[in-house]
Length: 284
Image 1: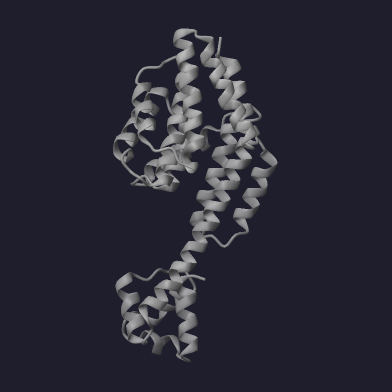
Image 2 (image 1 turned 120 degrees about the vertical axis):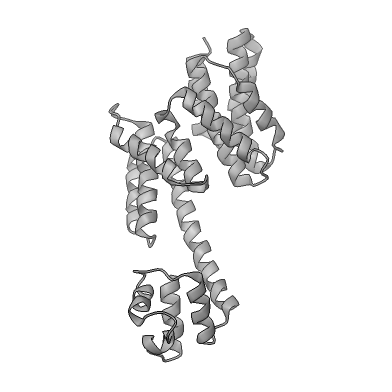
């Protein structure tokens, strides 16, 4: 149910025509398009319309809030499926997720964004070894089209970091930590930690550890909670691997193995396997 369909529900319950329902607040033709979700209605006109028809504002907006929460949960559920398929390197599941998105009741704009995220995940997997430069360009442009960093922009950037230069990623990540580092919002903390994990991975791949202490300092400032534990464990693993590459101390690799084992025991076998492969690749 949308604002338009909810207005229509109230109108029909009152037995009114569209013209009688809107009076002189807005044109009947514009309102008809609002009911059909072809046009939006601004807040001032909406409140005036509700008052004009004796509709309780708190009751109306409570229903809208329930609709919004359900809508948001649908988006978040799809994104969780994307992440799971990505870490399992499951291209078939990615295609199924696209079907779920396209048959959902999300708006066309949100469907496009969700599909773009799926395509970004598949480009990161890059199973056939062929880079889709047009898609990479679209992802980067979409990030800059969103004025402020919200959940969508954080996810888009995190998924697109491979498509930026190492130096650009360092600059962007530092700015994000400085701007959002003091937040106590768990969702933003997770997003920042995911971005930092990517940057640390790039640092190991590039054998460039300049400024990594800045990120370790931020991670240490976050309280360890069940929601944050996994992310901090991965950062700790990467920190130990970096220290090993700098010092050559084998005992650091042994502690890396403990973290890998703990993740496996916790039911995160795919994550632990990826960390094990990464360690074996870069420990020499």
